[in-house]
Image (cartoon, rainbow, N blue to C red; front, top):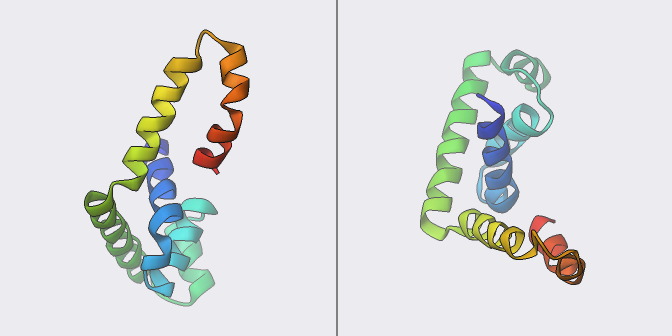
Length: 106
């Protein structure tokens, strides 16, 4: 999994993580957010590496299905991209829109 995949999965986990099972959410959090290896997650949770891999895959698939249905992460990314374009040449405007950036990125 490359860095873009991890960033994407982290965004999905932030938005939809509460919809996962506790096990999937915890293992995905350790794997993605804490940057632990599958082996490290397995040791921490007392299961096999394969069990961690299955939980991570199923959790990631579920998160993507939620995003496909709702589209919150894509919308947020689109809004941030448009704000970047609007404020690229106007620092005063960027400062005034700082609160919106904070809401969307937070």
